[in-house]
Image 1 (tube, rainbow, N blue to C red):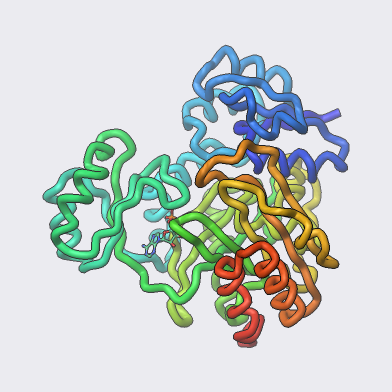
Image 2: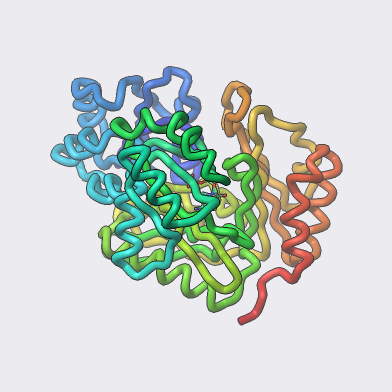
Length: 386
Ligand code: AMP
């Protein structure tokens, strides 16, 4: 019996366990929190990510190591890799942990992206704001997620406020300034690469954020076939350069026909949650297959799928469960403001049927605003032909 160790015991680990268990493997999850929600479905080892004695014990219990959390200290990942195979590699993880190194990589690979600069002082910030023009966004290089650690500058007067908010981070996490992209849509490529180099991608996913947090995803996204191919070719370039093993997501902005890279996540991703109920093989199972060197499953979408995130508190499941292809995912977490506590997946054979299902669910749950942009996108024509 093979045991996969997962660093981080949140909902991503939980779904990996639930969806890869039929492969006949075991899991151990490692998390600093005793109530980490993956601990409800797999043995949980509680420990700090930099506690080498705890990591030594963890390594002794597992055959291979992977992540549900990308901000595990790179040094801990490297230390584990000297003891057990670790996928994705600590080197790939280190690139994706730092917005500056991932953007530099995109640039080297010829992937278009907004202008960016490493910022070490208020003077540099002012100089780069003048160069890029307004608006622009100051972000922490490391440890930011879901729009946290970001400051939008709309006028020159914001330079002081931005530096006051994030300047103290310059020495800790580093800072990066990015030009603002007036995008029409946000999309992501969720892709997987096996230990033998086989590469597969799910169809592009369209994403809507509220306050920097993912609210809804639609697959396939309403983009042209040409954009679909281009985005997937960018993801393949990144995966091959990093010799990446496992699932990852590449987030992109669409501005007309143009695609600009935002960031990559070196793990299964929230914008791939629809794959559990809307694709031949889910991102969770394919990640585990990749990590174990098993053949990868087909990534085709089964019709049209939408994911709705539940933030803070779980709503009533009944309206989703009443749908013919409505699926409920409760992460078993305590409700808390801003916390991702679950999601629903809806799947239908046509864009019209999915729009109808979303309208019913939105009305029943009082979530009309959440479903509206997805319904609009579906009504605008589903997948635009090339
Ligand atoms: P991030 O944490 O970098 O994914 O940013 C969270 C969200 O902020 C993104 O999904 C976008 O909606 C928005 N955002 C981030 N960077 C930019 C940018 N350079 N231009 C426009 N919007 C951005």
